[in-house]
Length: 441
Image (cartoon, rainbow, N blue to C red; front, top):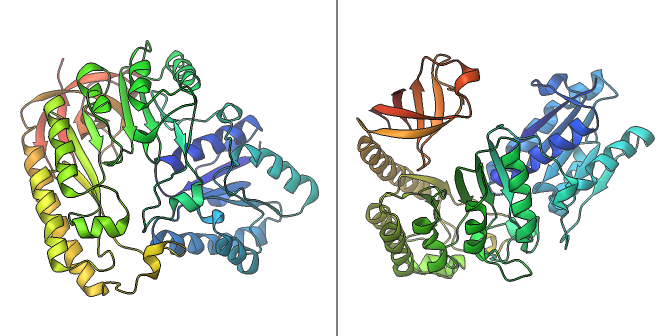
């Protein structure tokens, strides 16, 4: 049996794309191989959000040249956000002749035909669609990373055009799936043993299907599906989040008490240059509404440091917002110019040494707050959905609380007994990025 391996970079959208690609390959008779260098087909699913992702990707591509030399039948495929940029495809064609198949984010369903043509003809295959008006989810049967959890796309693409972001150019304009189709998919997932779903979109709050259903309507519909016990979503946009959606935290018992709400900057001036369409006052108003609706809600965020023109005063505003909101966790990024975005042309780029100093200061503030908040969990007991054996120790399990806190805990149960189930865990130790505990009966 032929073997495959998928290397995935980037966000949950890319992870779900890789699940779809894995499902396609297994339907074609391929078997998963853990070691990419022993596989017959390797797919590299790429990300373009950060400059480092570009560099890492090209480094990995170079490593597969030796594999092709040893095995002429080896097939190397590249997909994801990077091929949606013509300059990347041109570079692959000129410098990486051992890449057999290149396709984009919007025609994954075409992959089996591209693979069959490559095998049948021996010729390289290239297929990039700039803005596919229809993405047929029914043609893709994903192989899930977890039996009990599933990622479910509700929208594709993005219409926001933040000045720093490449996503609208790599994933096309925003498209919402029909609510009834999403509900039917989740009903099938529930029948297959899935207990938790993550609703995915670049901006879930702008979801609206042809019948006029909005994101809150969708959450209510999923909340009624038997078998599903937890609903999560990613990502919200402060400019579009509605009071109706916020009220779902009060009215939908399966909706997890957790939200990822990107801030990006604590400076109104910088937010305007980023084209974010909200200011810090509006953001704080949303936070207050969320905590009124759901007092125990946990919050994470994204913050960019060193955006062009960011002054020390602007950065102090970001630190102030971090202290006022008190996030449970944060994804902090050093600004990275992306060719093709407006911000890449701004002339007031920030020197690296200044950006790195600010970044370190922000991380220190965020980590202090995260630890302080995690210390509040010590000695208390929480429901944890068990994901698997912990990466830290073979005799320890890992899972998530309703608020998305990572918990590593001990239990007398075997993996077959406990993985995918909900257990009660007493927290015995709090760390900056995780909690530790033991199962209580």
